[in-house]
Length: 75
Image (cartoon, rainbow, N blue to C red):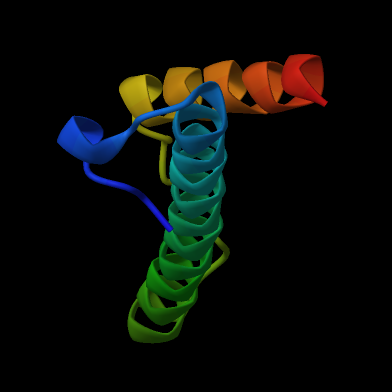
């Protein structure tokens, strides 16, 4: 669980909340990938042609890389 910042009274509280936040961000990034794939699939059906490339949002890609690196460093 993410403990409200005002109620974090120990290092463990902070660490647990940070881990939960990181996990939720990762889950949302994975969910985003599913939505992007669904979007591409629907575009292909509607256009009835070969797959088109949908560029990733650069800031989302950078955030994903940063979080992944951070998760690997913290474990």
